[in-house]
Length: 430
Image 1 (cartoon, rainbow, N blue to C red):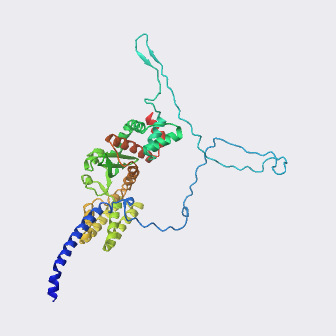
Image 2 (spheres, rainbow, N blue to C red; image 1 turned 30 degrees about the vertical axis):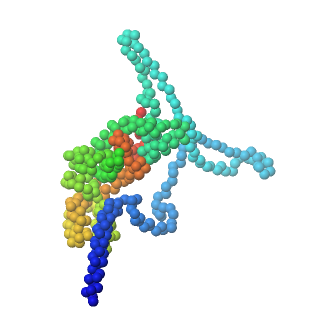
Image 3 (cartoon, rainbow, N blue to C red; image 1 turned 90 degrees about the vertical axis):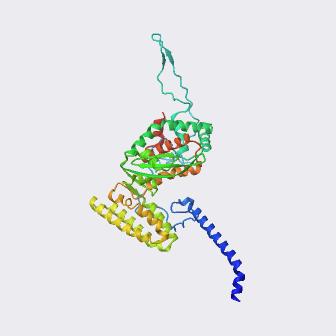
């Protein structure tokens, strides 16, 4: 009877089995596709599963012992005095005031229309030699002055305003009407003026002892290009290239670059393997991702966290160079042993391979105190342009890409050097 029942159910069983196999294949395919959007490298803004917010302590303001922040007393540009001759209640005349209340008001000046300056340049013809003589002048090469050009460029690339917002701000504040096309032409003129200091930034990056590098996708005319950042010393450089290969790194740093590169684990940097520092922030993010997914990985994640904490302690109170080299070798051996134990589990094998492949690059920051253990400088530099990318959506031409990389480089570098943006830009645009 049992056999008869099994025989009767066999067609249904085989049908269900095939359906299960198809569903498993589909599920596997969808999980692979999901990994492109949710993995250890996905920024928090793109995560579908949002992080649990921290519980507030309920206390407002800075913690105890934190230095108070107070604005400096502004320079007084106008004084208004208020007095009373007689008592408003009994009309008795009043003597000298017993006290003077002092209140400071800071206000914007009344908005005015723009200056329209006419330049009349006298020209002459020499009676003796017949040559045409043009009087010396400081007239601008175009219709717009350096102050206006600088304001437009900063509104677009530092304030992140779309073209319509730039046009609206100029109309509201200065009663100046400009089309989007004119605004873009002005910005390109500024970029042209900034080309020389831009090349100087490239030279500074090449001569830096440590360079932090990162890259992210950027759409140009619908195609995927790459926005690169190079941070070294007091300079920040942006370039936009179609490639994500080592050619870009060699183009910017040169093939004979002898400094140290701090980077993530992208294979591009293997060409510079003699002097690298791999980013611990990337490593710990991937480790945390595995810990959330697999309970058995907690012990490894805790180990890596302790290793990182030890690196920070050594850098905070560093021993001499020889002792640091010895400590680095010990930490390296310990990490190798942990990675081998980790690789025994199929789920952790790929991550263990990443650790082993970069084993010579995790502790450069211990030997050389001038190198940071993370690539945060480069990641922070990219954030500004990532926000702009969300606003702008992408670029339409290579000329636009060149304009973006030049202006963004100079703004980021001037900020890093604590230079005033408007005055500095005007000095180059004149």
